[in-house]
Length: 353
Ligand code: HEM
Image (cartoon, rainbow, N blue to C red; front, top):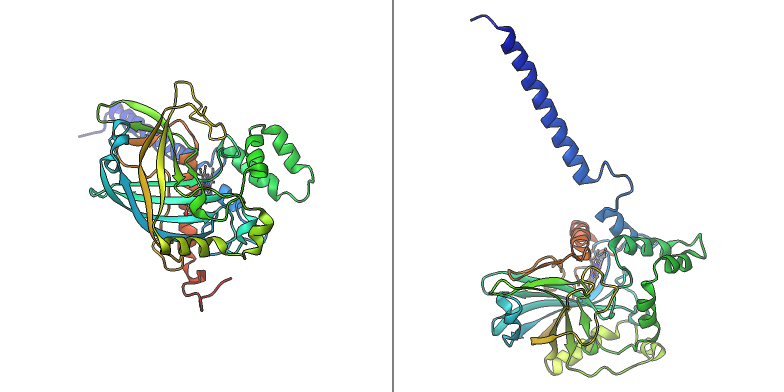
């Protein structure tokens, strides 16, 4: 059968349509990858900015690089089931793998030189679902957005401009609350005496489908004892690991999980702003640390404490940090695991760059 003019026109129309679809798809991918928005902050940029002047410590976490593993349990008392249907809020005991750590990119930094201490936790439910969290002892985060965190990293690395930090602080007034804590809050001599705060806000959903914006903290059973930085320096570069190993060897160490519920209007999208002290608090149970293990070849080394790994009954809120953190932690995890040959697997041997 001979071609009719209408069928030729319809072939051209089809080809044009296919071309339009292809261009639209390529543009969508390019947009998602950030190729069309020059200057957009990417996870790789933020991870690169964490590196010290001499380059990153290959094989190690790109932040919170110094740490020690532990295992234990979360003993849930059932009280938080009213807030979230997460399986680990039913009464019972749930397996925990965790990591005490210091907020530094240097795995060999002396303990007394690092102000911020952290806790990485993975709580596993019998159905295999997990709640991962990475918290710090500061009561507020230094900045309000991931972009401001990047700007802070750049300002603190900028040796060419003596006013870089002053200018950063002037442009980010929220930084003041963190600086005040860092300057006047007491230091302690033990990971066991620290309170670890989620700072980021999440949404809990209970079995009735009710949503609540929350933050959480692990509050130590051990009373904090203030120690001066000079005294801490005298305890040696690695006193925190020695201290927690000895304490846990003597007796399990405990923290109470306190969930704080937001009032309507509390700033859930900004971890640099504390919520008022009078907010409703629910004590959900205890973290019990039973055994300390070195990080080298320990159970936490290859764990990524990605704060967006959440069980049902928990989800991220309008806080932009967890998504930004998830993307950055994934870049850090991919790099450090690909650099495995540089990691000092056996303390006596191994290649350290
Ligand atoms: C945009 C902001 C942030 C960036 C880019 C960032 C970046 C990183 C990176 C790259 C790691 C190493 C991840 C790995 O290799 O497994 C890390 C670890 C960690 N971060 Fe963040 N972080 C941010 C915000 C926060 C916040 C808000 C907190 C706490 C409230 C926090 C607490 C921690 C802790 C405790 C660890 C160590 C976890 C572990 O032991 O693996 N970070 N961070």
